[in-house]
Length: 418
Image 1 (spheres, helix red, strand yellow):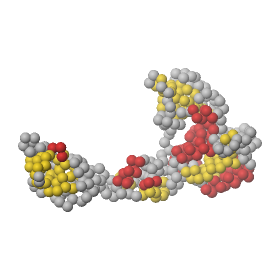
Image 2 (cartoon, one colour):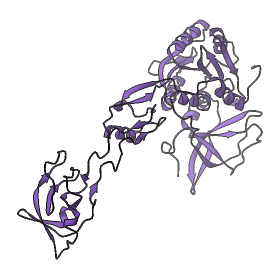
Image 3 (cartoon, rainbow, N blue to C red):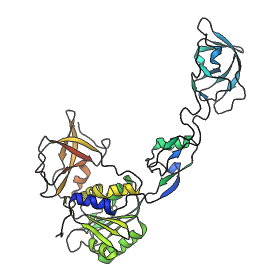
Image 4 (cartoon, rainbow, N blue to C red):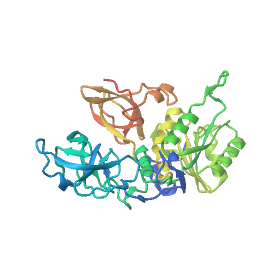
């Protein structure tokens, strides 16, 4: 048995006290590789956008004062001087009583302060008849009206999306400084594990945790640099952990943390370096064997081997640490309010997390516990849209009661039944 279980709140306090709260480093990357990365600096524009006054219609660049009186039955008559195409620098200027043909996006020639849409004009040789007046600045996008030189485009800590990357490209920036992705090692233990794609011998099972944890690490900003499976052998576990500690910034293990004769992870961690195990066993269900350790200042999270327990404890404890190491804000999981469709009882004396599916009924979300089974049940893991939390002092959540559901999938990903 565990000597003493830490409470859920004590486990969260240990995360804040012992584990990293700052990014692992900074690197400069091409904007082609910047999407999904976190900006490590405030990025200011080196130029104005647009970099010149430009026409936003096909038509003619004019002086507004030359056409202020123009009407259908009394057009203004101007002399055309030529044209300016998109992408070329104007070589002519607009003087009083004259006009220059422009295309959408073309640079406005000097002397012009407005553009008349082609629909309100008529060409007669070199003469241009203008049937509608314009005001100063009409149909013109002024220099710097979109982005001013020196304007902050991206703030430090911004998760770069295609939109931010597009802004960087628009002002001519080829690279951007971002926070390095923390290097993560994942070690799954157990002699029963076989890689997907291999033949499944009697008594063996396919390795799930390596892949669910690897995918989860990527979603929260980490980069898996070391992924391995080891049998329940102290020397093999020791060697794998030493390699992981050397190559990674944070280590996640699954399996080998309970109280059986082959649950060796905590013992090996204590042998590798100080302080070793910080916390072993948390008063939660599922996930009681979860263990935290520090070895050579590297965080180690030893999670249970059962797939649902491993993934849930990853979301609860590992995710926020990796996000902070990646320069992200450790934002809580998104949550929604839903009504439970049956009475749900917690485990006595433990913070209980119950996986649920969501469906929509009569305009509201309804949460239904995933059918009971062991925390290793595969369908429990695949079907869950999120989980609900029941406090230690709660007797139950009653049928029809509204509660908070923490989402493990986005609402867009879920097939929320109607």
